[in-house]
Amino acid sequence: MVKLPIYMDNHATTPLDPRVLDAMLPYLKDEFGNAASRSHVFGWRAEEAVERAREQIGALIGASGKEIIFTSGATESDNLAIKGAAEFYREKGNHLVTCKTEHKAVLDSMKRLERQGFEVTYLPVGKDGRLDPDDLRRAIGPKTILVSIMLANNEIGTVQPVEEIGKICREKGVLFHCDAVQGVGKIPFDVGRANVDLASISAHKIYGPKGIGALYVRRKPRVRLAELIDGGGHERGMRSGTLNVPGIVGLAKACEIAKAEMPEEAARLTALRERLREKIVRRLDLVELNGSAEHRLPGNLNLSFAYVEGEALMMAIKDVAVSSGSACTSASLEPSYVLRACGVEEELAHSSIRFGLGRFNTEEEVDYVADLVVGKVTKLREMSPLYEMAKEGVDLKNVTWAQAH
Amino acid sequence: MAYSDKVLEHYENPRNVGTLDKNDPSVGTGLVGAPACGDVMRLQIKITDDGRIEDAKFKTFGCGSAIASSSLVTEWVKGKTLDQALSIKNTDVAKELALPPVKIHCSVLAEDAIKAAIADYKRKHGTAPAATGTEK
Image 1 (cartoon, chains in turn orange, brown):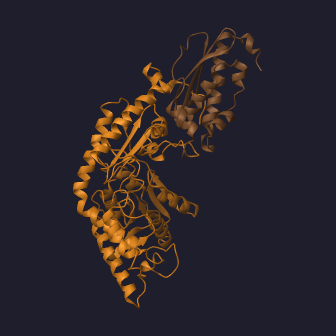
Image 2 (spheres, chains in turn orange, blue):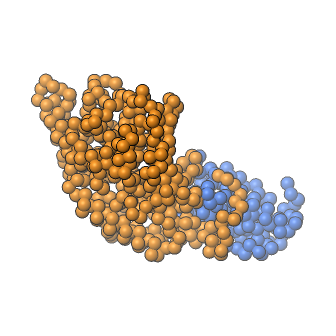
């Protein structure tokens, strides 16, 4: 028997790898020094650990340790990259480019800049969630200072063509920020090959601790940022505040493990995801895959089960932790903006479930979840007036529905 | 978000799921909500000659609270006259199921479903049956 509950929401967060915890423990106990203390051995040892960590983190993304700035997490990294670059390079221009399916940390940073007089272009995506590099090329103008495009999407797992994007940005002489949170450590990502100038990463998405992240800031050619937090001038003046040494050590260990195990783990997760998908679609009709079949994170499976509401399905499989693009719990009642940007109909967006497979999921769990989902979707469809109408041949698009939200 | 025990109980053991013949003159059908909003409720009631609701069936596309709200109203309307059924308010449903503020719309939909089903029945008959008196 599988052990319940099953965690299959690894895009939201991941459990701490025990090896990461072991690496952190000394820095939560005896090695408590402040890495900025220059006058004694406690500080020196903490600083050594931090510098070693920078190298390990840099190694995962093809960067030098000197290019790693520590933050509280990816939300802060995104804020610092976007607002910091916008403020620093304001003289050069006031235009930024991003994409409709970016994370809120990027979109909301852009929104704030718009209120401050910047102009932002939000690029559309295709049905598979990928942007068209030609759209990007056309969007960049003489006043453009920064392009921010994610490596992989947190909802649908679509991997963006970052190498093409980086090439365009380099040609046009604009900075390229990449929110790499979901992709880093899962798929190959090299800041050199992709011509990335700024990249956000987070520890807790790669089996590290919460509350620690990093921003890669290119040194050659040098990228400058206006700081958001004033203080002691830590992190080359870009991010003041005493360093979270245990967190940093944990992030570095998480990066080291991800780098060492990536090829095997990516293959294992892809196989598990395909097993889950196949076991579901073989036994249920009217199931749509959201996102790209080809350019996809190994552990991501996002499916819409037509005529079944996502939250009801989550409730039916309550011993399995997943998430839904249904917004039934949100005050707005609007379904996922990511799915909507991909052209998914609202009703199918309400019917979507995101399965996020991770390092600790097993084949046994996948089989259990597939069986459970098939059974519950069948039961909920028996209860769904829409399924009955569709089966009777009623075209639901031609029905006049009583209320609009 | 945690669900109340009553929502869970109705969700796991929904009452009166099913379909009545919508062409039967003694059946009123209410279909409310919209797929794009993530909620569609269909409530059907079967009415006796003396104007009482003798049977009720529902099917709902929606979250657990929407399913529980519709399940609950099928229980409540059975045995009632149309006027009595019309007096069921969304606040009664919300209170009984302890719905949180973001789920109040589910109870509103349940009340709308009762009204729509009764309106459909009345439309079929041109007028209200004796036991329910005249329209309000």
